[in-house]
Amino acid sequence: MPACIFRAGLIGTSMQTSFTQEQLRRPEIAKAATILKDCVHYGFCTAVCPTYVLLRDENDSPRGRIDLIRAMLEKGGPPDPKTVLHLDRCLSCNSCMTTCAAKVDYMHLADIGRAYIERNFRRPLGDRILRNLLANVLTHPERFRAAVYAARLASPFASLLPQRVRNLMMLARQPLPSPGAPAQSGTFHAQGERKARVALLTGCVQQAMAPHINAATIRLLTRHGCEVVVAAAAGCCGALPLHIGMEDRARANGERLLRAWAEAERVERFDAFISTASGCGTTIKDYEKLFPRETPIGMLAASVAQRALDVSELIQQIGLKQSAQGSPVTVVYHDACSLQHAQRVTEPPRQLLRKAGFRVVDVPERHFCCGSAGTYNMLQPELARELGLRKAKHVDSTGADILAAGNLGCLIQIALYSSKPAVHTVELLDWATGGPVPPALSSLPLPRSDKPDASVSSQAAADGNAIW
Image 1 (cartoon, rainbow, N blue to C red):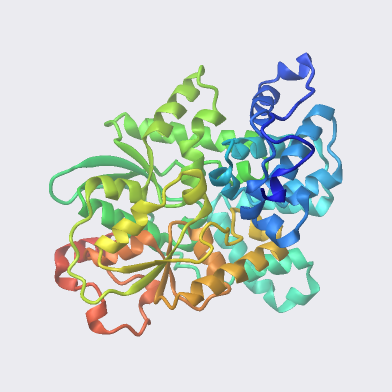
Image 2: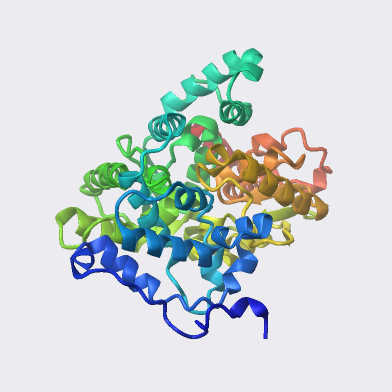
């Protein structure tokens, strides 16, 4: 029997807690206590935890962090810096959840721990400034664009700046689209018979850095019979502030999005709420946990969560149009952690890419996080770099022509360390069914026969270009 399942005689025994009755009257403590009792310390989670594999510190494993959260909540008051350090190092990749034999809800326990730290721990000034900067800039596309331009202006002086700021400037090297690009809001009508009416979340960073992903999504969905509505007042879904423990801000952002969608739904009910950023999709599908169900906004949140889908799930349901692609291009598909471990959506993207005519291969060690993890590559740059290099090495080892993923953060992170062109899954599906060549592939030296045939739907491609 593996040594990892031996720990203080706790094999098959629920974790014991010592919360007071007063503590248990607080909803978040009661919820944490329930989750904690599910942990039996088998330790299978350690083998799939990226930080434990890199650091070999029990406190940087899910099992160790569960103990730290339990002790922190039982003790009450300000947490100690060591606890904060180890919880901050958690990527929230949730790989442990797909491995755990006891099905411990680590994702929500980590959320409770982060929110507790945010309310009760006073971070050093530099940390407070950086975290507030991320929460106030990344969630607003225009502010983010301005910050990227400012970072580029300051790049000659990078060596004089703190290490963390230099790391942020490295991420700002990504090219930005023209500020004169048309806004993507309003209603985009289905081509042919309408099969569904959907609301599309265009994302915060994605609007600023990669609006071509949103354009490809709109083309793809309308070509497949969807009426697509982009609510101009939607804004941030709350995923980013939630990931760094700012639960109240996440709830406020989520409520704003819900009200914007409710207003748009007055015209006609939506069949689905779609996201192309898997971190956002995970948060929206989980809205029932963020908003109390007995409140009006909680009932709205539950209704939206029940209809939330990743774009690949929707296309899978509708059915992808047949592609006239010739010899297949080889695509290595990277599973974003939020899609693979939190949403458990793994097969639809692969099946769709194969149906579109691509040869699909997996990344070795596919369960491992690339190091993007929302804001992780900005808050924990050293560990993120190790994970990015590890992932890029595996990606490059496949010999594939193209890297595809369902999350922009992963694409940006891996592209820092891999030379392969990185594109969103919807860009490839759009291309294969009549859309334009994805921008990242415009200079790729592929044989003509390897490219999706423009005759698949020349009119669809023309209509698509009218969107972007």
